[in-house]
Length: 364
Length: 257
Image 1 (cartoon, rainbow over the protein chains, first blue to last red):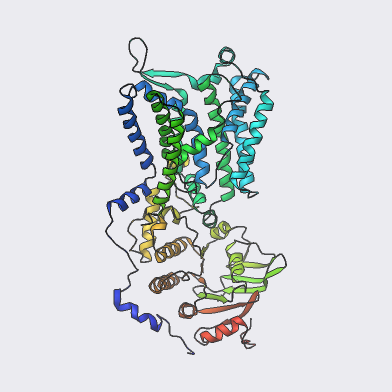
Image 2 (image 1 turned 180 degrees about the horizontal axis):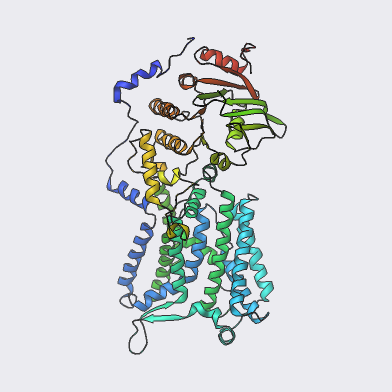
């Protein structure tokens, strides 16, 4: 064989008569189960929404009308405010295939810093709040730099940062709480997100749908990031980096800059949660909300965002947080041991991850 | 005819290993240049240097007569050099349209785009659809389906379409048929010839000798970090090429580069 004629090789002639130039295509009838798998693959928030509705109906039947009151349902929203806001930060990080264990600690220290700035250094409340935000963003930036530039695993970086920030929190605050009345007198702006408005209360001023400003902020953040992730280049890049960072880099995404921006934003959102935390509990306590890292990861996982990154939606996260809220309040009203809540939430986490693995197989 | 892309005395070292040893390289307009070589010969380093994925220690690259230096694949892309990597560099969970426009998304006109940074999904889908049909990839029905739901050949097709859509000067294809079956390989080879017929020169890296000899206009044989020789596939056999590549046979002085 000294010369080669252009065109298909001899042995390939056999493929011609079979089916012209068609590329292999596999069209087969899909069963109902496969179709469902496909739908869940396309709309990742659908599964947590169905679980949320089912649990609402379940507790509605078990507990009765008390549970279905506007007051009780909006109480759930109030109870998940902090987890929901921190969950937005956690969702962004987990979508990039990372994890942020320092979210709760950043939130607490940011709230402590807002208090210290106001009551120790005598800064005006708006400046104190901005100081807290700047601190959160700075810690996030440090996390991001360690993850993106030093190539350290996010789990290790944020595990270390969690301990560092938490210890700094106790050392800095001398483990002292700033009381609610003191804040109310001197810097009510710190408690601003705890203010409520009521829709549809009865004549005596009881009941009705009660919203705190924190709840509105949480919902606004969720909608904002649902938009950003779906409709901006930055949002699509978050998914691309989580899916396959090497591929994203070759396709023209600035992966390092992307990761740093995500962790910085996560820190900033945690500081915002710190502000909301003051509103939620009224006081500033270095002992509050330390387990928000676990709570936010729970919300994210139950909400169907994959811990392997690149899949899921932030709407799912908020449904996940609400599912936890429904279980907590529902079981409380039903009057069982609160440990049942943890037991059921634990089971739900495992089921959610199993469903995620199953959905991932929906490659057709 | 002047070469569109040249490399002169390219050197790349990784620690004590010299991957490129004063290597030269030429690509002429409108041709398919195949680069072949044994594993470890430095093909990948050469391609990565041209596509901006690694930085050269010495030597210079010129594109259309102008000296260029690419700090990243993004810089090479901006200069009109598109690369289809062996791994395809696609995000499996994202749609075909998202992948085609990754890193160069189109935003909505007006305030929606400039202030709210809103992407123009409809426009990107329209262009993606158009590019795929231009290359005859009609079997893909839904431009919004995730890339992971496509077959290997379809994915390769989308990656080639992406390169063809944006590569204005040079397209580099790294092992495009390595992971494909016979039929799918055939489809991709047709795609490659189709892209050449649009006048865009192609650098093809492949281990598959029948494919190389079928589509290449010239073959660059890479050995021990440099260009050993350039051969014409019409005048040499595959066994000659393999012999040069492995060092079993030394090319004539006339051929040696």
